[in-house]
Every structure is written in structure tokens, then in C-alpha cells.
Length: 336
Image 1 (tube, rainbow, N blue to C red):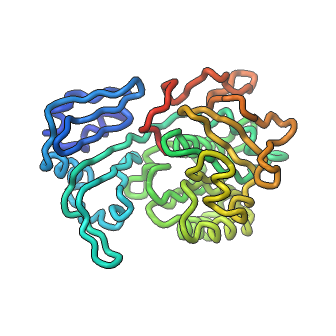
Image 2 (cartoon, one colour):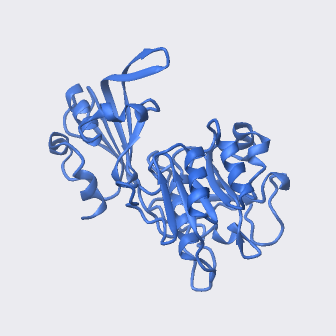
């Protein structure tokens, strides 16, 4: 079963009757009550079928939630839930609110973002994630939709498999949202490497603590720092000798610093800043102590517009024109 066939199996027949066959380059599917169904592709976007009604939006959300939105109540408080394969399902509509409780009562629209593997996406940065042969801690910085999650997934895989003649290391993935490894009943459905253990579906601070205690990882990979408790979780892991590779929603190092604070941002040895297009690496700097100016030598990139890409036989990073995510322009549906 290919990637799109597996995804289509999660959708209600009424929706597929309107969309017809789903294209292989689909990155986002949107169902809005009163509007035609929107398909966002790597090559552009299109609208299919007739205008959806509220019942179809509700049925789509229910089908993706395993016919029990109620069971996803805690996740829906964040506005989305994650399904098999790491796809994120955003839901809008009417929420009833009482104190701190929020419950979805009417579905108005559904947005499904398709998680995709991109083997080789991290080729252009792997050499920067080592110092004297050992992994370092790194922070991936970019706005939503430019491939942070895709990059982190491939970093985990390559560290776990071994890269650049180095042996693989033990990797722990703290996958709070289920998007990095796409676990089904605790088993990854996306390739995160042979030496990787995944703590799925629990808050990062708990997942990281359990990984350090129980699995003795060399590196922990996790997504989207910025919530309460993240600083302590990262600091505790590093105190245990574990390197941490994570991401943050920000346009540059200065915004990352404002979002995370100097103390948390300063724990990372490298900052990988993504560019304005999917897969583009704008620069890699040596961390906060470097003044965000990068390091001399060691191939650290500045504003050169490098792209994540496969290395050639000589170990050189892919050229700026390479595009392992499959498109040259930004798509709003890339993994975060």
C-alpha cells in the first residue's frame, strides 16, 4: 500500500466521491462547510467537487478520529489531532467553553496536512551536527510550513543509522504530537532509524525524562519548543550528557531568542535557520555565544541559500538547486 492509498483509506467514501483519486503530490486537504474541497499540491492547488455541507465536514473529522472525536478531546483543545502516519488534522468550528474546559460541538472545517518522508533532507546539515566526532545540540529555526519536522525526522534517521563514516548513535524521539515518527500503537510508521526509541503522545518534558531514565539515548530529537517546562526538560537532559536537537517557530535567531529566552536558546551549540522555501537552509550558526555570526571554517553556511539535499559520492552537500521535498516553491502544507 503506497502513502496516498493508506491516507485515502482513512477518509469517508462521500468525500472521496467528490475529490476523485487523490494526487500523489497532495500535501494538504481542506474541507469547509459551504465551500468546494481544496487540494493543495506541490505543483499548486485546485478545488474539486461541489460545495461541502456541514455534515461532510463533521463526517470527515469523525472518520479521521476513528469515529470518536470525543476520545480526541484533549488533543482538540490544541486545535488539532494527529492520525496514523503523522498527518495532522486541524479542526475549526464552534467550541463550548466553561472555565478552562473547551469542547468541540460543531465542525465547520477540517484541514489535513500530509506527513511525508524525505530521505536525504538532512544531508546538507549533518556535518554541522558533530564536533570532534560527537553529536552536538542544535535548534532548527523557521516559520510554520517550511519543513522543520521533515528535517528533524531525517536527522534522527541519519544519526541512528550512522552518517559520514560515523557509527550510528542511540536516538530518543519525544514525539508529543505524533508527527515525527507517526506511531501506531507505539510502533513508528515513519523511518526514524534502527537505533531509535520513540516516546509517543506525552508532553515533551515527560517524554524526555522517561527517555533519559529508561533508554539512555545519546541524542534526543523533539519538535516545537516554547511551552512551559521545556527549558527544564532540555536542561535536565543535557545535564545527563544527552544532546538535544529540537525546533522552534521563528523567522530568525533573534525571534527564537525572544520566544525561548536567552537561557534556553543558549543551551544549543548550533542554530539551523531555514529559508523562505521548502528545504532551503539559509544558514547554520554556532549558537548564541557565537553572536549569531556563524563560525569560521568547518563549512558553516551563511546567507547562501543552500538547500537540504543528498550528498554526492565525495560527501559534498547537494547544490542550491536540489529540492528533496519535491518542489521549488513554498507550500503551506509542508510538515512543520
